[in-house]
Image (cartoon, rainbow, N blue to C red):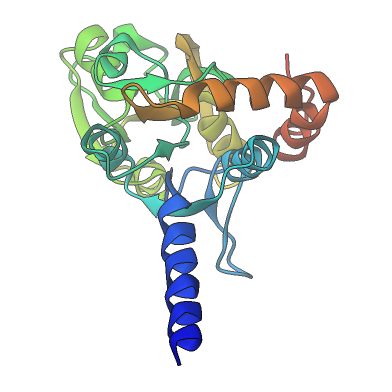
Length: 244
C-alpha cells in the first residue's frame, strides 16, 4: 500500500512539475498573416505561430499558446501572467521601459489605406478626416503625434476597421504594412489603394517580462534558424517572398 501511495504521489508531482514548466505564450487573436484562426481546423496559425514553434523546438521550450486581445499582452507580461508574447509587436522605447524584447524578427512600418479616388493622399490630408486603426498599437501614438487634427476611430481587430473603410464609415485606415498589403491583395482588391509612404519603420520583437532568462535563449534559437535557412522557409511560406 505504501508503494502504491508513493507511486501516486510521484506521478502527481511529475504532472504538477510538467504543468508548471509549461510557459504561457500570448499571441493576438486576429492579425493575419502573423496569427489567425484557421476556419477549417479552429487552430491558430500564421507566421508568428509557426516561427515561435520553431524557436521553442530549437530552445527546448514547452509552452501553451494563449490567443488574446493585443492590448492585454504588454500588461500581462508586466504582471508576470504571461511568459512571452509574439503578436506582431513593434519594438518601441515606450514598451522597452516596461518589458524586454528579443532581437527583431520582422521589419515593418505603417501604411495609409483609402478607398480609390479619395482626396486623402498622405498624412497632410488627414486633418478633419476620420481614420481607423487598432486599439493599443503603435499606429495610435503615431497618428496622435503626426496627424493631431484627425479623428481617430479605434477598433479591436483588423477586420472591423477594414470593413468600416469599405462601408464609408471612415476616410482612411492606418496600420501595419503586412496587414494592409494583405487586405489590398485580397478583400479590398480593386477598391482600395495605399497612399503616402511607409511611415515609422520599426522591427517586430518577441516580448518578455523584465529580466526574463528566456531572452538570450530565444535570441540564440532565432539566430540559428536564420543561419540554417529555416527562418527563410517560414517567411517565404507566409509572405511569398524571401526575407530582406
